[in-house]
Image (cartoon, rainbow, N blue to C red):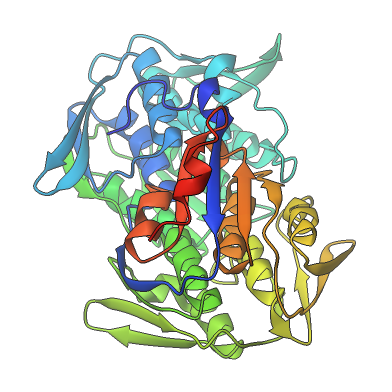
Length: 446
């Protein structure tokens, strides 16, 4: 497992170097889902016992959220190989702190998810207000409204949210928008509330289902996860459990795009195909061959693509977290593609970097118009966020010449061994410190 402080500033100096043009061939095993494991780790705060979680990906965000829990009094132990998979053991029996400080919340907005479990276990929480985000404002008002409906009193003081609820009581809660984070926070608080809570217009993502399954395995009573109405019967306490995290559908989708854009033949193992339906549908529409096999999902491509239109939507619609990667592919499609982003208001920052590589993209409000070109050229580019970084890697895999990607710490947040997995299927890619120039020569070797 990554060491403590994996996310420290020195990682910002790293670069990823890619020499494009190699078709990806072979197989990649998809890691546990980032967006599932983070709330599941947080939900272990609810348990009066030890939770063992398998298929935990090696990510900076995992280390950050574990540091948050340690600050709250949790005992956490990583086992790099337990039953052939990475695992983390978390004991939250002796929580002795209810404050999530600014130092952690500023690094990862998901830290605000500890509010619900802390209120359920300790009756109070003090959480640093999360700031803005590169891809949008991401307000937490829906979290707060939902918790207030459960009887929580919330105030603000010196940049911190102060929440108190000696007793949480079940309520009927309607979300104005199917927010994943709000659904998770309310669901976790309601798990130990008195009575029944019903969340209407709830988020339907697979990660919500995995969280509910985890809480149920501890003794919770949640039904309807994966639909827009979730019913939670509060219980008095939750205990120890063992749980395996679902595969990461966004990591899988990113590798599907990487295999397609390079004209490769790539098999992805450890995938749940149902979670990838909108991504697979758009790949097929673009002229890519995607085949269900007994061991996973295979993508084949001849490197020629049709222009398509994409509109991001909450699940089960097309995921906003795959928008940037598809934009990279569509820069090489025949014709004009239109991508409409409805989830985040500022999620086209990668377009400017793709233009540096020869892409023809113009932004019109919440839509990006992508005119297909014959080729992309390697360039020095910068990742503005996690999925933007993935898009630049995908573009670099097919670009002529050398691509240098900086701000690689964004990729560390959401992709487990990205460089190693791509190298294993033939990509000419490596990661180096910016102070080193000699490895530039090595990238050209087989």
